[in-house]
Length: 261
Ligand SMILES: [Zn+2]
Image (cartoon, rainbow, N blue to C red; front, side, top):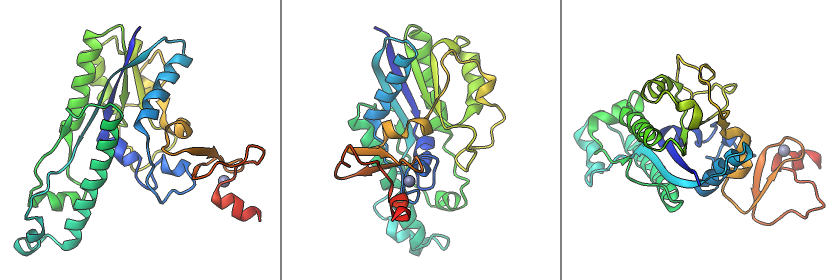
């Protein structure tokens, strides 16, 4: 049976899942980060291909991102570098913890850790992180290299590419002209152009995929973490409850149920 390999640009996916990102905006609390369940994401991609008539099972899964390795003397940086504040240290530490949490979730769902980079944090990077000029180019390159290598050597399999950067598509087309047959693009809907979309010169619509791209926003209910998952009958936002809502009751999110009383 053909397999579905999955390649995730984890840096992009992390941004998409942050508070006020396109995924958390589909839930009742857009001020909270979106809790993605990686196992459900894999299964949702499988089901998407099955719904297009493909008989398929899960194959290899990769998440590529970089997580800073924090030095043990990080707190001393405040005294040694005039540009580094306690706030900066806190922000970097929290960011590292949040990414680590995502990576660990992916690993427990069967994703390989081999494309996760752990560069050492250097004082000059703090300034770049603050003004958002720090670039993680190696992540893009790795995830594309993995995808293209598998696509070329495993033409019978499908390869899902989870990314928000359509600028990489021309490179894939050059390396693997048959991409349209068995590459599935997984991204966010282009109508919602927000901060997580970089300025891109190429649109995914310039590329002829045999299978239409999978848009994450359309599958929030399938990929969110939690037990009792509902879509609000009024605003259609997705929410999770500790206890199930009785089947004969219509589900309403917190906002809508408050405005109804
Ligand atoms: Zn609602």
